[in-house]
Length: 240
Image (cartoon, rainbow, N blue to C red; front, side, top):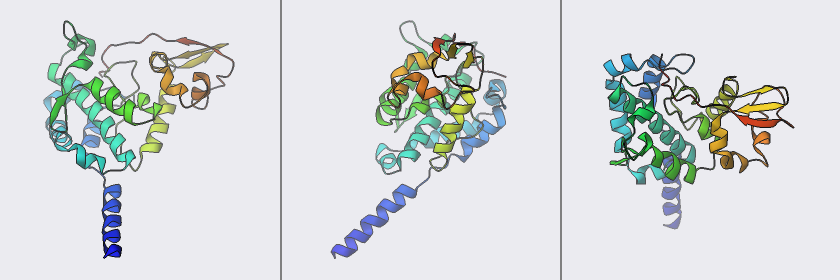
């Protein structure tokens, strides 16, 4: 009897850990409306939003209990995709708009508006990023993956994140973002970094002794010994 129960328990764990939520519909949306530079054709997406809305209906119906049965990579991929897809929906719900910042309230930011459906309830983009992702996952590279619809954000990928490919996708995102000279570059004895590294420096330093040590493997040239300055953040909409 004990051996049977053990086998059933093992089978349950195996099934849950190998489960993969289907993010293919989001990949279809991204591949259609996001160009090679990560810029979005919001006008066209707004006119053809059915696939995005259907995808978000499915993500919103996932229960927290169900999600907790997935692997950590599947969970993180899910949260990143939800954040990015809900941001796209937030923009097209209000398009045309010049910047996501215009969508904030009198006493609140746009990221504090309840525009996200998660576990069947309404929540905010800030809650997804800060109360869930940053709190539950010790992974600074999420800052290269979460895209808040601004020019200075990391580029939006033309594919959804998946648990099976998450490690390679996050590593690639880091390298792509660090190669964008307007945001990150070395000039003489100065290392210019995106303001993202200023805002979330502690997240990166938790992995290495210093911010410079964290970015050095990703940036073109050696960052060691350079003084750091942060580049201005362009909040203009990342539209084509």
